Amino acid sequence: MKNKQTAKMSKFLIISVLSVCAGILAWWIVTDVLELFRSNVLPSPVKVMQTFMKKWVETKPDGATLLQHLFASLKVALGGYLIGAAIGIPLGIFMAWNDKIDMLVRPVFDLVRTIPGVAWTSVMVTLVGIGYMSKALVIFISAMVAMVINSYSGIKQTKTVHLWVGQTFGASNWELLTKVAIPSALPMIFTGLDVALGSAWTTLVAAELLASTRGLGFMIQQARGIFRLDIVIVGMVVIAITGAILSTIIRKIGNKIVKGGRLG
Image (cartoon, rainbow, N blue to C red; front, top):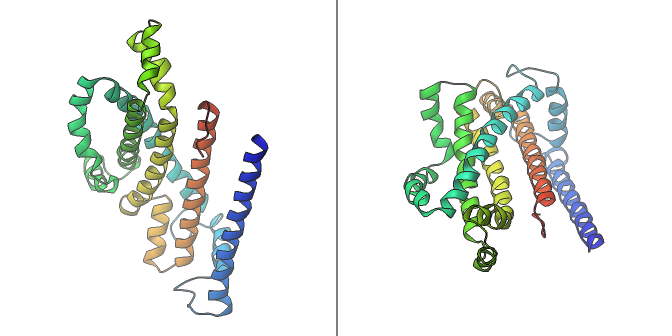
């Protein structure tokens, strides 16, 4: 079974690499070979790679290197994300487990979850100014919503027969929650962590476009203003790769913790 899973993952990896290479090849043919687009409209992959290498050491035109922008974005994203997990997961669990908490919190939560995370940017900037805290709070709200929803759904999907068995053996309400409901909800909880990570990363970049002095979103905004699409694409690629790496880490941790199944 394990060998089949390894072979399947290897096949998937090979196909993924080949598809990416095919896309880059087509991009190179369109730009450098056929020259269908001017470099200021669509820079070639060669130009983007050159810019990527230069941006590791150069601070022009936005005042920071690529690594400095990446660290600034990660610092905000992970800060807001971890706070969102610390509050969102327990909140979703207790809302699903306790009807009184659910009735108390749900009306406010249903209003908050319909508001896009980016919409909070202006409010947070007005309240706490442009800086780390405003962006972290926006990330917190965006990430928390996904974690609450998935944690809530995971607890609600706990099989009744499992709870009956626990009650038959004299388990208390707390023991039913911690030893039956939460373990069975772990796949949904980790799915929420994965979804929330993508939401947090996307919201951060959007927030940095409006309220930041450093970060990948800020770098893209500055490059767009001076028509440096090569830097814009570099920022987009770094965002995609970083998001994929973080998502993979979450899934790997989930696969280690969740018993009897894989998250992806």
